[in-house]
Image (tube, rainbow, N blue to C red; front, side, top):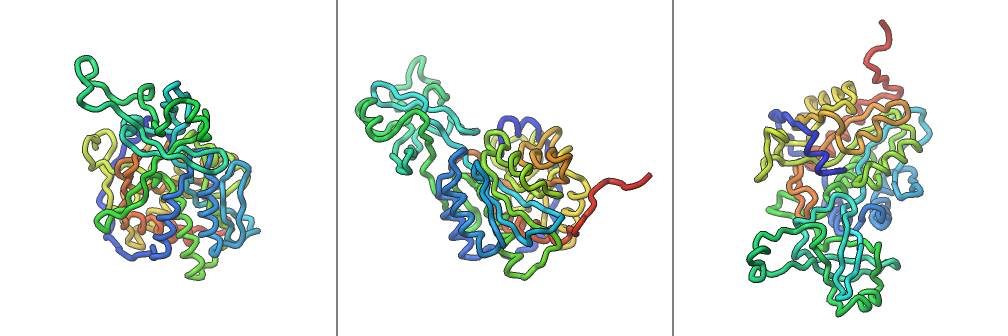
Length: 386
C-alpha cells in the first residue's frame, strides 16, 4: 500500500457476496515456513536486498531465469524469449523510520520512511540497522501515565515527540554503537498464526503479495503448466514511497499485461466507516478493483475465472488512482492492460497486520487460474474496428 492517507481518501468499495467458497489449500508447510522467514526479515524501503535474496532463493526452483535491477527489484522469468509478456507483481518493501537527530542525552528522533504510524510507536521494540549489517536494539519510550497531568494529560504521540531509547547514557555512546543519522529503524515484531486462521505480523503489506506470486510460480511448475507467453514474477521495491520500483521495472520489461496484488482494508474492524470505505471482510475472498487504471477486459477475464473456478471475490472501486503499483504499470509504455487483486487486511501499517488464510489461498488460486486464460498475443483493446 503506497500512501494510507491518500488511499483511504480515494477508495469507495462496494463488496458483494462472494461465490461459493472453495477451500482447496495451495499453501504447503514448506511454503508457510518460507513465509515466516520472509516476513521476519527486515526489508525497509530502500533496503530491500536481504529480503529479495530470500525471495529469489525460494523462487529459483520454479523459474527459468531471474534478474535484479539497480535499485533491487527482483523478478523471475518463466518461458523466456516469447514475444508476448505478462507480469504478476507484489512489492517487497516495508514501512520504517530513519534516524534524524540524536540528543545530547542519547535519545533518537526519527522521521518516517513510507507511511509509518507514529501513534502506534510508543512502547514498541525496534531494531536500529547499522551500515555493516549489524543492528542495535531499542524501544520507543513514552512518559508514564502518572506524569501526564495538567496540560500534559491529553498528550498524544506525534512525530516530533516520539523518541527511540537504545539505553545509551549520551550522544557519544549512541555514535560509538555505530548509530548515525540515516540509520533505518524497524519494529521487532515477528510472524505468528492466530487461531489457526490468521497470519499476523508486520510487513504483510505487501511481502505477502510477493509470497503469493511466488506460490503461483510454484503451482505452475509443480502442475507442469506450459504458458504460451513469457511470465515475469516481479517483486518491486519502493512502493511505499511512490511506486518507484514498479515505475522502473515496467520500463525494463515492457509487458503486454500486468496483474498486481496488494492489500486492502477489512472494513469490518472497529472505527472504520463502511459508508466511506466500503464493505470488505477478511475471509470473504480477495478483492477485485474497478478503477480508471484497471483494464475492464482484463478485469472481466479475472471475474469470469473466479466464477468458473468458484473462487470467492469481493468488489471494490477507486475513484481516481488505486494507490498501488497497478497505476505504475497501467500508465507506462503507452498503456499496459493492468488489474489489481487485493488481499483484505486488518490493522494495516501496524505490527499486527492480519490476513485470513483462506483469502491468501484464494488470491493465489485466482492469479494461477487467470494466467491460464490469457493467450499469446491476447488483444485487450476494447474494439478493433468501427
